[in-house]
Length: 297
Ligand SMILES: [Zn+2]
Image (cartoon, rainbow, N blue to C red; front, side, top):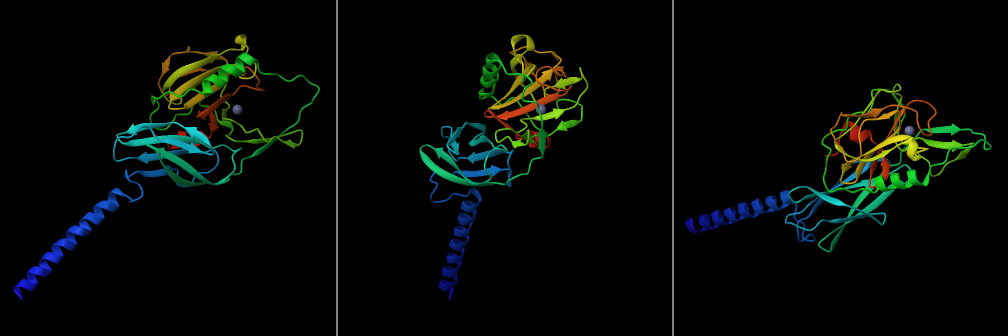
């Protein structure tokens, strides 16, 4: 009888030990297929077109930077905490909505991360113009400088927390508006930013910290953008401000969130005073709204 009790006791102890191990394994989520115990996830939970996808990759051991690919394009991943990597993937109104598989390669092991990008209806505008009137064309210098700026990927992360609004004026045109030109839908057009109807000369502030990497002026040939400033927030995130009346910074300057960088104007291709703020991730214009109100740290 005593022997039997001892046996039961022993079995009970072994049982408890096994469940403790099982619980520990589920908490750290080690799946047998992922030898390195990699955990991955995408934020936001229900993304829609225009959102920035934040791919989070947690590894148990030190690894080299994961390679992140979506729709055959590779995006940089940066270490944001010990053993935690993050890659930001832009989506735009021109992308097809629906299912995607994000491919994450770590030390030559490939894992697939499914994500569903929901469709989103953007407002439309009808633009009518006389095809005989001369339209303004961008200069090659302007185009190459802006393209160079949008390609910047700096490993440091300068921004912190939610972005502040760059001007106090009311929003006069939101992100992603689509257009009909003389009744024909423009397949490649979407409003690549947010417009603020601030008064001429009203302050334009940096929405987040960063380094000024572009200063362009009408005098230099910035016919479309007008006087403009580009701020690199780091890790492939960048802001551009167009149609300015004045510029208070120079290339190379480091700016803080809320610091005045210029004034609202109507220079370049602009029909009235307003600030155009474009926020770019890996060279693509994305919706700044989640960055403004939630932040992507
Ligand atoms: Zn605009």
